[in-house]
Image (cartoon, rainbow, N blue to C red; front, side, top):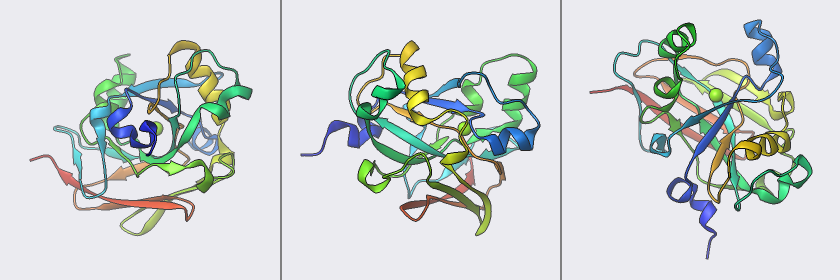
Length: 218
Ligand code: MG
């Protein structure tokens, strides 16, 4: 029988995401590296799987792709140290943190929450569960993304500012993590726009890949 966390889409209660966690991204944007992880949330209703489409939210004119490595939490934890974190990783997933960038820019300018620009329906396309065995060294594994076959993001988790154990530890200081919860670990440099009619293909090295079409909301 498979563990409940392997079906994170049904059994997880939350998606916590980290932003600005790749050196290449902060360098490209000309912003300083954060002193501690910057967190936001996406609702689990944002999940979609291959075969479903990414729908541009109503009024959005600038939808951005962000390929990310996701962590699936194995069991309940609270206030754990980085050295304890590995025991609480059930496995991984490949995710897209789709962002309504025009809404995001407005929210930042007006000091408003990010919930809409990051949490709309279909904003979290995901792969199936990826076991720990498939990613023996999560501290240096490739992440890539192509739009209509053209490479846009091509990096490694070795470019992260905050390591996965540090992220889990930091998040667990403030939130009880439960089996099936997901933490998205940020996107490398190269995040950019995608439009209706285009397709996104992305992967964790050659371990897992997935493909989604982008469509207008009808
Ligand atoms: Mg992101």
